[in-house]
Length: 533
Image (cartoon, rainbow, N blue to C red; front, side):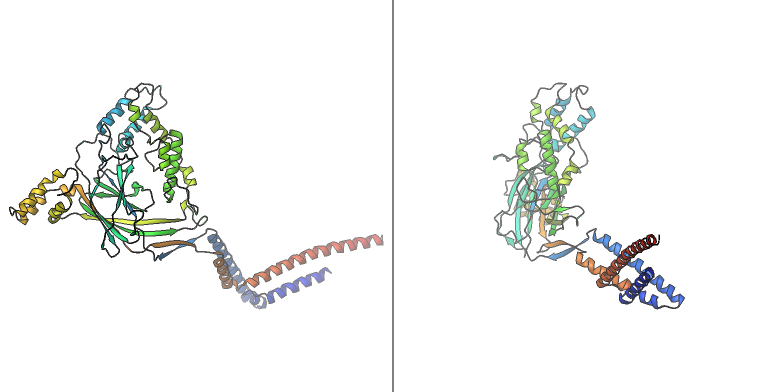
């Protein structure tokens, strides 16, 4: 009976080889020459190894979730963004006492501290004082919320502003200018179209001529450090951003005086795939922004998150991060390091001034990892790619016309400082000096170049670029690739796989039947032995 079983299994194996088509196997079976037998054996083994390798690589690639980005031009016109500008040379006498007096008060408040009795080292306090004596320390003491009659911050004055459509024709549209507090520059200005403007998608460019009132009448008394977070250049910090985005001036351009700066923009609508495609992760749900502006970004979320921890721990807000209106109200409009109340405190050797304790507290807040885990990249966002070019401006031959247009009849501060231009204008019109003499003297006058700058913000194209991520290896593509690989190396198809599966099941069944047959034979033999006894 066992012999019959072996014959049956052999016949099924031969039948499998004859009926199931696997390239090379039939040739190997029919081969009678030793050379071709070895040849087909090696060919089948190498093909199988290559097939197995490609399947492994394909599977690994699939579970890495690769994606490709498709770029398309949208038919919709882009919406003109907002422009935020900050004076890089802000005025330091906004308080009832000047910056110099401010620095002096700081030194008085900490001159007699007994560090042995305090839970803080002298080096730590000195580092904080060094930070506090920089502009950010002074501006942290200025009111964040503007009062209705506050005009002392007007250090940036737009003398000429023009709006152009997509054909670069002048449009009679007014720009809305809103002052904004900033810890590094005190007052910044956000410029944009009104919320109800009918030209939101019709504006292709905006030009601004800005007067900075750059007549400095003080010597900066504070400490100096590399301008990584905030610039110490002479001019403006300019940022072009989405109309609903809270400006992050760290990412702005530093714009020098006496130059024409052209900022070219391209608006992009980016749609990303959620996890697991993106290694940095993104989330489809918009995180609720406490400022209710409808704009979400990972960087803004992280800064608001850090401020929430700072507010909870220190009862004030850090000057290094953006915050919401609700957070500002909860902090009683207090920035960590505010010296105003501490100046009124009694100076003792065993009491740390409140502004020092607040700075110590805010510096101890370490929540980067927590906030990074809580804040995802948005799966969809609007990004504005821009680059800035500049050239000297204006030409000396245009100074007289510029003076007449922007200075002569204006009410800008320190207009009397430009009297030399007025005198040259009178000499020119009265014929006392010719063009050559006028130009020679204008080359020695730098007041316009030292106080004015022109900014041109223009779209490079009249369409929005849509960047859309799509999975580059879907399940359908995976199966198609598997089919192609199997057909390439061994000529296999999906039905071949089913046939192989059937053959494996048959072999298993034969193995089980063989075991059952052996057990039955043993029982029969044992029974026969008992009968003989």
